[in-house]
Structure formats: C-alpha cells, structure tokens
Image (cartoon, rainbow, N blue to C red):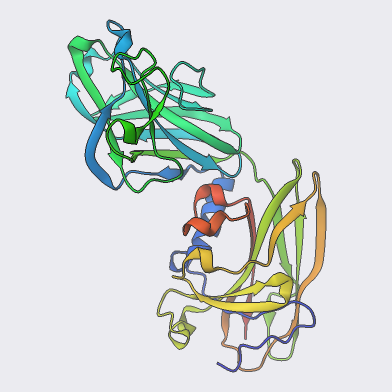
Length: 356
C-alpha cells in the first residue's frame, strides 16, 4: 500500500474508485443529490419501521367535536424541499366508507387549531392514509406533520401507529376540546400512551440546488509522474449559508480487500483544508467521515473559484482504473446522526479520470 502517498504541494490525496454507487454511503449521497436535482422524488423521512404495536386515535368527529384529536410528529429539513407524497401508517377500527375527508397538514407546532403551513386532502388505502402535496415548497426548518380522518363517531375509529426509535422530539397528541380530560394543549405522547414517534414516510425533491458545486480536473487520464490538479467552483444563488464540505476520492473495488474493506469500496478524504487525509471503508458510519472544511461561511450570492484545491504528482504504482473525485456540501453536523438523508445534501460536484 506504499503507493497511497500525499505528494501534493498544498492539499491533496489520491484515491481510486470504481464508481459503484451502491457500494458506499458517500456515493449513495451523491446519487441521492443527483436524483433530486433532476426533480425526482426522494424519501425525506422514513419512519415506516419499528412499530411498537400500539396506536392512538387521530380523528375529527363532526358530531362529537370535544373528542376530535390528532397526533403530530416532528421532522427537520436542512434545505428547501418541494413536498410530494406523505404516507401515514395506521390501524382501522371502523368503517372507512364513513370518512367525510382524509386530511394532512404540516405545521409550525403541534396544534390542531392552527392554520397549517401546508394542507392537503388525501385518501385512505387499506388502513393507511395517502396524500399528495403537489410539490408545494417547504423552506428549511423543523416542522410537525399531522394527519387524521374526518368521520362521525358512528363510523368507528382510525388510529395512527406508534414506532421507535424516536427521531428528534417524541410525538405529540392534541385534543383541543379536552373531551379526554387531558387539557386543551398538545401533550407528549408519553403522557397518553408511551414515549414514541408516529409511523409515516414523507417524500419530496430539492426546491433548488442550495449550492452549485463544480469540480474540474486538468486531465481525463493520468500516468505516473504526471501532474494532476483539481479546481472547484462554489456558487450560492440565495442568502448566506454555513456549510460543511467533504472532499473525497474513491478507490477501485479491487483495492477494497487490501484495506480491509471487502467489497464496500475505499474512500480517501482530504481533511482539515488539505492538511490531513484519512482512509475510510465505504461501510464506515458517515459521522466518522472527516470534513475538508467545517462551518464554512458562504456569503449571499457568492461565486467562489478555488483553482488549486488539489495539486499532486501522480504516484508510480497507483492501481489503474477509474477514479472519482467528489465534493459534497452539507449543513453543519448533518452526518452526526449516523445517516445520510435527503435533507443532508446542499450540493455536490463530481469529476473522474482514468489512471493508466
């Protein structure tokens, strides 16, 4: 493994990769960003698993309004999304044919009496509720999703499934008419049943690319002792933003076993603005990925040209194959939860070369 040397003048790393997107979380992130930039819906929140076996009523009763109540669960997005689909998982204990309406909203707080930021009418499919928000734009922030059926008491109950683990805050339940004697304000779910979240999937696509990132290599192919340079451009069309940048190169799948990575791929990260580098297997938890720059302030309307973020002499003995260089921008601390989600990605740039 002596070929893996840093020979650059200022910032550098060498890494070889076979571009097999499914092999590494980091490249999965790039694929996810690319899909959303192309306008394809991606999962923003997936809380469909981890059912506790318990459930709670989420229903407006026109004939008994004091018992109308809804569950709410919070989620956070780091950038603006066009919200497309919401699927809420529940239990039917009545007659869906008695539904007057099936309603979902995205709220600033778990308050059934508040006007939701986004609201839509959906349908009931089996025991679940399905909604189309039509691509309505939701800015970055923390929100509460609520869903319920409108059905008279004679039609029986629809109940929303509970699930674990809790992501963010535990779910809330709001019975503003106080028919259950628990007060008129929203209360933690643990005060009613148990501390848990609600089961749902929320989908959408990026409203716009929050950042435009471009990587450019000075050559498409490289041989030993040739100079390799990598430049980057960062464009911020909106207001000022703070980001974390990751700069990585991925080795071909053939070198995985040599690094103890098996078939998961090998990533080399340029860290601390080029002062260090670190090798990670593609299966490594994303919170262990070292950043190129943390809490980097990008001014509003910025056009930043970084002409020499990597400058090296290609080392003799480096494996031949396709190398992918990737620059990814995330909100600060986005990978701290151990996952790479749609809302974690603000921008990405990729370039490749073939080593002879």
